[in-house]
Image: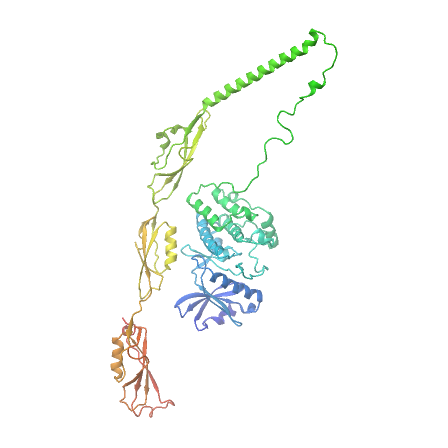
Length: 599
């Protein structure tokens, strides 16, 4: 870090004061900085000196600024400013109070699957926004995902992103993405699209919930080959407690063939949201399988016997009475036996089937939706003895606790059941747990859109009330109703009181000309204006009389923050007793603190 300490304390472009180093990468150094114009803390990503003239590195640097400048999403790091000069190249971004997701994963080892899905959902929202703009990230990995203290995710580092209708960064070893997460098409140099990002996210989700990478080898080349050819160990083999539906989501996201993956971030997001709401959800097959026709080819039913042998073997000659009739009689007898046997077989089959049919009953599924659930619900319902009830409980603020929300199969469908054979009709009932309750966290001094998104994820509704505030930045939450630490219920409306910034009012500049210095100061104080510089000059006017003011009388200016400079007569002999060449003296007068701030 010593090589970059020289930048600490410097002001870039007379605006960004570099305060300290907060991160270092292969291409750039990240500083915490203070934006003196906007009065806020920012992050400044400064390109390293040694690669300042490397064409590919500069291209990647510019590419990142172009990509993120096209995006505006709460789960993507915002870029405020970009400077690309021969001697200095930097990007100014929002300052994130968080850590890389990779660091959190290393600390935790294995992340709880519900927590991992919460992060995945936010990343998918960010990717959905980027993909809608034609931008493919190409380097989704935990190192490029930032995790804030409040659980919000920020996607960063669009340095090798593929932009629409522009020349993107060449896919060299610096721009190919990390081999542990790249898609098969990236590894093999084939064309990519938004589905490549979904593969990388699937690999990242695999690592979060199992604690290990899908593929690992001694060399990056070996890992890349495994991405193309091998299948990872199913997550449930590494952690049997994981939901089967979660494994299905990962397996589909990591399909080798992009056509068999989720086709968009929205598709994968829908699956993730479904699983979060219904942890026992099993997703239907998504692969297109071809059915083979039944029966064998080339041979029709009934054409495999010896149908022609009897006709070809008959001899010609004299008919010899009874002897000649024997074959006919025998044939007739055989025919009767065969016909009788067939009839007997048919009758026996029908009797068996009838007996079996008598063991089964066809029932119509009852409607359970809206009923109050108890453990003995099946005993209190019509045909309840035929049901095998399974339940799934979910929070629902609109349905009272203990009430059936939905059922599978649906009401009115028919099923065959057999008590004798133990064949029951399984019915899955989704039961409401009522509204979910939370302890409201402290949401003040946070950007209101971030707070609104957090509350909506908790099932809350938001009402935004804006008002001026002299101390809280515009767009930040001043207070909430209910207040922090109070218990709230999903579906409740939370009022967010949001700052509109300091209210600017205007006043007219008073006429200070011809007044004494003291009179002029009192006039400025009365008008809620501040005194600026007082310049004394030689003049025939009486000493202390105001000769000029920096803004004319009657000018409309913002109250409190506007300073008025005064030119005051020093008298006819002013400057003759001073050692200055100009004969001028500057007297800076400091008003009382309360008066200067207009309070």
